[in-house]
Amino acid sequence: MKELSIVIASLFILQLSTGAIMLYENPSRDRWVIQRSWGLGLTIPNGSPLEDGSRVEWSKHRNITVVLTLPNISYTDKTIYFIVSIMTKKQTIIQAAVGIHPNSTYWTSSFMYVRDVYHYNKTYVAVLLESPPYFNPNDKASISIYYRPSEDKHDGVWASSITNLSQGESIDVDILADNSSTFMDGEQEVVAFESYTSNEEIFKQMGEAILHSILVDGKKVLNGWYIDDGQVFDKRPLFEVGGGQVPPFISITLNNEGTIAWIYSKPTWNNSMHPIYSILFFIVLVVSTIIIVYVAYRIK
Image (cartoon, rainbow, N blue to C red):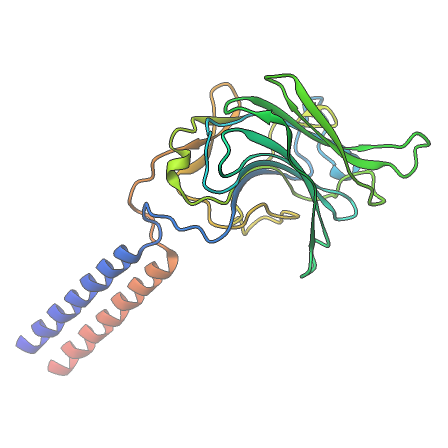
């Protein structure tokens, strides 16, 4: 019995030590280390309801507009974007963004596109970066991506416009012609909060970034979207914005007015242990139990 007690006590200490190490190393704690940009956005699949009673059919649409209010962020150590993205029928991703960059106190407008999305050597093309209209924190923005037909209704061009609704300034930019005139069917991550910074201090006073509406060919999307953090493995979005782990202090919430908002909320240390650590702890527990039963049997 003495030997059994010693074995049980030793294994108990081993389990406690393992648990303590895993809690100390747990990446779910307040300190979050970024590896690449993260994006927290909304993805809209085919079939999402529109305000006129119809439903989204991306291959029949050619205009997407997002209206939002920027957060109260006036400085950053790495770039932050609110970015509107859409894939055309030729698998080109067109992006228009309002972003804030290091050493800046205001937000600027940028336009780009991505080709060969599903190839290892996909191509990023900047059309216009850090352009007017400029935005102050809490300004309201309208971001559109649309197809503009030519006068002879052939060989049209994909274009984009960004408007500062708070100050009345706007810009309209031709992006490219890719022999398509509608969007790609599938699940489109149309708007995302994308960030390259790991500094929680940047977000503490951000308040709310409010999404007022998403319009498809001028008709408001009522619902049907899902929140996409780049880690939604049971869905099949056409592309993802960011891809790094979203920090625990940023989330999306539904306001009482029916608007959606990105908010900062202080994370608590915590609860959620990384699955790998949970599995390791379970293995130690099972092995310990087997050893105890075996030793008890041998002593008996």
